[in-house]
Length: 130
Image (cartoon, rainbow, N blue to C red; front, side):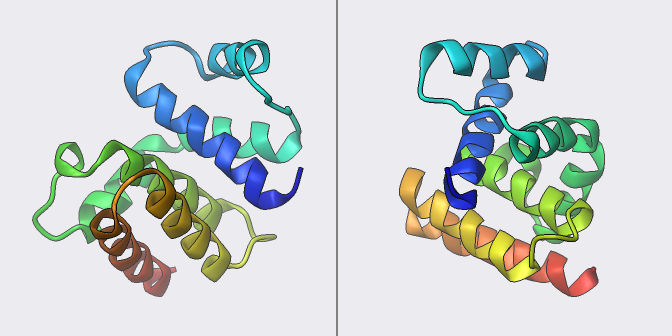
């Protein structure tokens, strides 16, 4: 599995967590049972890391979304931005531009072009403040 595929697995778990009030470890176990899910260090680190740093990540999104509350952002966009911002802030092994591009591509795949443009703007602003 390449990093893009791993990132998509993380994104799916982060997206599911928005709708399910269960521990992230349980969601990872459910994913292993229900679909083609490979568990590795990157997936565990980023998936769990997003939720350990969720308040900080969401504050970063809210501070840079100019007039949009977290509740107004599409759930797909929110999940992808959470993954990207976690990588940008806490994973020095991943270039910021890669995190942004991968998030935008995930949003294009699962949501709309408007959602991807919105996320691209927020992530670009966040990247300038890092």
